[in-house]
Length: 603
Ligand code: KIV
Ligand code: ZN
Image (cartoon, rainbow, N blue to C red; front, side, top):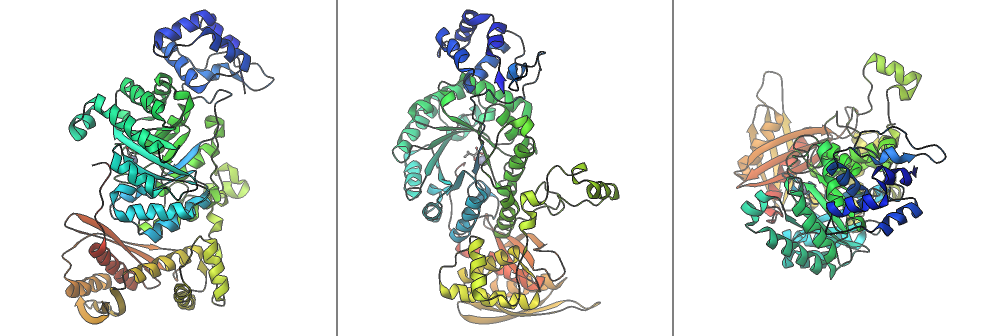
């Protein structure tokens, strides 16, 4: 693309008039005529100045689109103005979109999605394989366990930057700095709220105090790393001039990435794009940093808003696998990545993500968190590429592109290959686990997992990657909660009879037996467990998911329990779904007993 700068400058009345209009609009950050001559010489305009041009044009009461001045090499620029804000980039604007994954931090804030250190490491390894640029591994000040998990991730991840969240206070920033110390590349992400309602009602701070805290936090963070991100929480409900002020100040203090979160999922795409443009234009030094979008999905527009932000100049998107996150979740990584890939014509950016790792990442996160993926979910839902209707099937068979805009293989559905069989040996098993990023910490753990694999292979002819992930999760769960284990169970169901369950549980090595009837075999099993455990917890959710296809598939069960305000998810997997359910229930009880208290960063 070539930029017709001459025409652009002359449309603003020539260098002198343009310079004057600029300096009226931005008296604090004046532009010299020499800078305009430089644009001419270089044939490009910095992104921040493009955004400022939009503001200048707006003040002059006319529409402005950079696209109007862009043309493919060798062909004349578009002659008639295209009145749309959603157009791509000037020639020197980077076309690299950084993917910042926050599954392990914002995703983990979903009810019951708290993960163990080992689970987090497994997900982090998969995210690295997926090619995300930054992994937000947690919030170090939340608990010693969180800090420990971030440190462990920082030790093993080499290709992605490892990041910790920190509120804008010295304790948090220090905890984050210590946690990321072992990282090959480490980032501190510090934040403070900037909307009037948050400053007044939550923080009880004046705007000046907020700016002061943000600047101090960024300066302190720079003592640990030169990669510092600053977020203005609830930015999309903040005053844009105040945002420009605080962002200008933190740039000066050393922030290198500026994040503009839509914390409550209030934004709409058109306004988001304009908001980013104007904000980048108004921020001093805005052309020297990476702008980032972080959108929540309360109105179902997180992905749309993130993409609009990209059109407005953002070059980092914060997102999670499967859109996991508090309430309605965060922008879904797979949708953002595939949207910019499939619609290069609109977005003109590329990511470093290996799209074939998307489906394996989705399945792993779902298995570990117990949050199933809805079948009609874009990209990673089981039906995302299934063509039921006869018309569609006919079209796809004749020519795939008639109804498919991307292939199932390109996002990793084919990586769901047959993995191992009954005759596979221990070495093949170990090699496959390593390829999946699963490292067992001892020969004993490998032997136990291998024995479980053989048991499963006896029941199920074909073993897929997802089976192995579930098997290792299940094994890790059993191992972690050695104190509480399912030893055996017997269930009786017969048409017209009340279902009965008898269960043997080992609690701290003591075997105990209990029985109960119930409205179904699962209900009977849960009641039998409760007869023994008397946990006083409330069952919030029970879900069963087939891990692979076929009736011999393992069922993966999630049980969500709550007690005294604490919510946990338990998981279990087995080819017998009643056994999987009992395991999941016991896992949830063990987590309820053992989970450490965490501080929520945003409260
Ligand atoms: O949603 C939000 O505002 C956040 C910040 C901490 C970045 O998650
Ligand atoms: Zn968030």
